[in-house]
Image 1: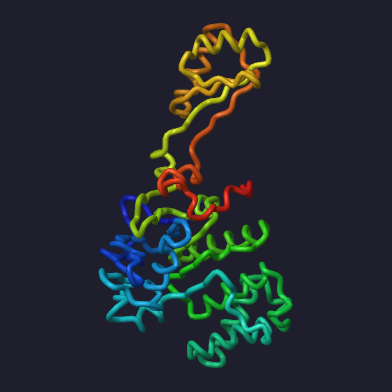
Image 2: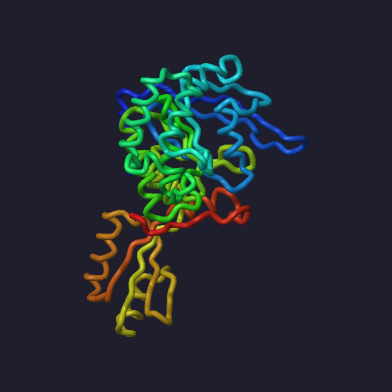
Length: 329
């Protein structure tokens, strides 16, 4: 479930904001005027096919590359005029763990502390704290090269937190992880946000955005084509229906006559009744069956998911197949 602690009465200040953000490479426009406002202490997910500009957005906001136009602020600092202020306030975790495989877990953390110019005592204290927090203290003296994918991701996230950032960019952080490791990463993200950290997430896994994000934006063709909560985005897509299945062919025919607009599945004696799948609509449908003396063997309610949202909002969705739901809930 999303982890935001903001309320409608007391909205959080913006941790990230952009106005008219633009970026091109030669004749190819990657970002064509992006406007975002991401409240502090929330998870924001940016979805889109490969080449849509997700990583480019992260690179601009984390000062790795410059925008061609527009404005952007992160943690109160202008990306163009105060890049050092931005860098001091953020952490970045890419698709692949940025570890030194020749160093142990603790040495990787201490190296990061040195790069951030923390004192020796503070660096060691921070390293010990993060080793415990990410449950890798028992392998603190093991080389990173020996770690599994999930352990590498844990250490990578721990290194991102050495500087206690206000904003963390996670660029497809669970790519290649097994379901258990993905769940562990999700739990770590939730813990971070519960502590007030803002997380900017790009992902190819739609269930990941559904699980974690307070708000989701869909990027396609260099533009934000939709933005809202997962439920708000799903509500924009038609396709809600109730599937009624019958074991008695006569009952099936009577039900088909009672719902003349329903789609028929002759092989399975099933009807697909389109419409609002809310409780009131479902109660009305069942009352209608009961009133006609028709008994269904079973029924199921179907509503659009983020797969449907993505496909509807990004054309035919063939630019890159997204990883669909993995039944992790």
